[in-house]
Image (cartoon, rainbow, N blue to C red):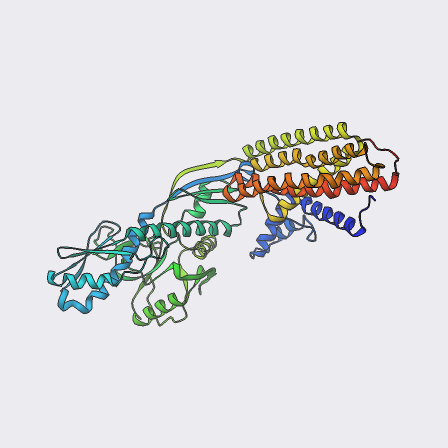
Length: 553
């Protein structure tokens, strides 16, 4: 009557073994973390003696997944950044000037001369000399407008074009501004995430707050200043035509041009056309390397459209200089010696190896579409994190010991079986967290503490049902069997509703709420497994060996 098939027993023991094996690295946290860092460095090319020695502290055949500690447990950096969306509008209008000029040039007989006028950021003002040609000019410029690519902006155009005397005024439409804001925020989030991932930090929290702000929390990083160095640089790379150079920073570059300093030559400034030939957005790869003189440099490669534009420009401007500009500084201004058709090249300058590596990381991750202003920055020290861990440990131990004592006093030997299952349950929770690389936070510890209390709930239902069946059933074996059968529906119903709650918290919540939901959801899965299968298996093994005529629960 009270039997479990051999294949079921093997499956239960194998599941427990896998869970305990996955959880084991957390018992040697510092050693395994050192091993993981060393292996990552070796994979990235730093195959040094120090890294190989560090990698030898943990066997390769054992799992090395760890439960990542959140910002509140490990310490780290917290930033709240505001994206300067107006900068995107201004850059968009600056890049539109060559298109407006080119579309009006064939109609000079009608519109007269075409001149770019000073205007406020986010507005393009172009003056024509023949006011009678304004209608034709507006028609041509409006032809540059494109449909807004959003569901809410269907039918709208991205440009508002109007006339004011002899001036053509071009601005982004309100629908396009909303679409641009959304694209800019999504791009900023993705680029920040890629930059942080490039340097190997663990489980950062990067999420949008409000219309134009981004919350960034990175555990394990030294300071907020260090985090700002990783993400604060826009890494805007452009290739721009050179008009001239000067040593006077007060020289007027002229409308449509800009004056930028040289990175290598102190006191030298370059006059460049504002509209770039190619931008860093068209880069597909950037790697640190060395130039022909053995100095650190960065190799780059464009996508097909960037390669075509770069190749056409170099073919048409052999003998002319062009500037490589990074974040409004001219890295170098080489003279074009020949046509460069392949869409690849090299950036040289007075770099150190570390600087060339960092530049390659920034370029590979992509340029931030707009500047970030940091409104709030905090560094959470590891001491505070350790205090949180200690407090969490104390809470968990008190809850754990209290439940163990209660079960042992209430249900005797059966309570001890439930206690063994509870210990295995906690280990399996850590095994699952390690398997998925989840982050443990203080709310996550609260979820584990709650699971400790809930984990014995299923056993309580079963044991109370067995007590009832002992009064009517024929023998202890039948009582145990009926106890599990009749309590099963109540156990499943109760845990399914709680699991649905955990899923909703995970989907709708963010940050610490998700951490709580993950540990709660995993705890429900493991507690149901240990209560229905593990505890029952322990009771069956005991019953098969002792064959008692009577049992007390």
